[in-house]
Amino acid sequence: MKKVFAALVAVAAVLTSGNVSEASGLFGRGYCCGPVQNCYVGGCGPTCCSPAPNCVTYETCEVTCYKTIYETHWKEIPVTCYKYECHTDWIEKSCTVCVPRTDYVTKQVAHKVCRPVWTTIEKNITCYRNVPVTVWNTCVVDEGHWDIQYCPNGCCTPRCGGCGHCNSCCYPPTCCGHRVWVPNLVEKKYPCTKYVCEPYVKTVPVKVCHYEYDTVVRDVTYPVCTYDYVTKTYKVPVKRCVAVPYQTVQRVPYCVPKKVPYVVTVCKPVYTPCTTCCY
Image (cartoon, rainbow, N blue to C red; front, top):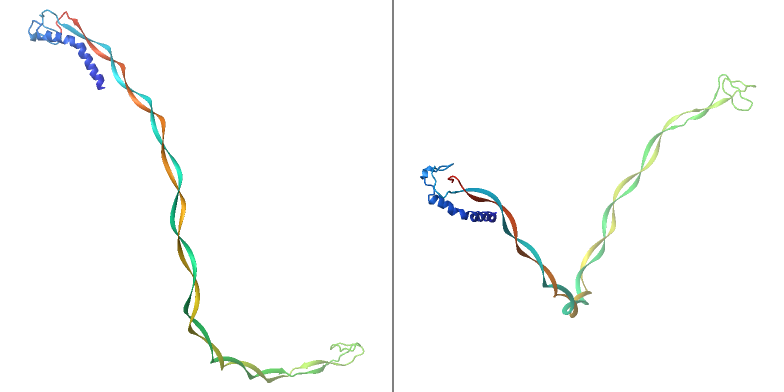
C-alpha cells in the first residue's frame, strides 16, 4: 500500500511540475493590476492585467505502474548421501569361568543321643469289683385251689358226656358240677441277690521309661562343593555399521523476481486560458 501511495505522489508531481511555475508567476509577479483586496473568493477585481491566468480543471486518467513479485522455481542439483549398512562379525573372546566340582569328605562327628531305659515299679491303683448282696423282697403269692360247684337247680348233661349249662335240661337228666378257682393271697419273703460295685486298692507292676543321654561318635560323609577355574574361548557376534555413499538428485527451491504491470487511476490537472481573472 505504501508503494502505491508513493507512485501516485510521483505521478502527480510530474503532471503538475509544468504549471507550478506559471501559477507562482501569476501570484508572485502581480498579474492582477488591482490591489490585493480586490480579489475575493468567487471572482476577481474589475481590473486585470495581461497575460490572463489559466483556469485549472481535473480529469481522471489511468497510469500503468509496475510491482515486483517473486516466483518459486525448482532446480535439481546432484548431492552425495550416505546410507548405513550393518554387518555381523564374529570375534573370539576368552574368559575364565568357575566349574563346580563335588567331592565327598568323611569326618568323625560327636553328638548326643537319647537312649530309652525301662524300669519296673509297683504302683497302687484303684479298681472296682462286683460284690453280691442278699436282700429280702416281699411278694404276694396266690395259694388258691380249684373247687367244684353244683348248680342249685340241677343240671343236665348231654349225651356227649360234657357238662351242660345251668338251668338247662337234656334227656335223660344227669347232675354234675364245674370247677371254680378259689384264690388265697399270702405274703412271702424271698431272698434276692444283687451285685454292688465297690472300689478296692490293688498293687500292680508298672513299666516306666526314662531317657539317658550318651555321646556317640560316628563317621559322617557329606558332599563338599569346590570350583575349578577353566579358561574358555567363545565367539561373540558384533554388529558393525558402515556409511556407504550414493549419488542422488535433490530439488532445491529458489525465487526469481518478476515485474508485473498494474493500472492505477489518478486525477490529472488540465490548464486552460480564462477569460476572467480566476484563482
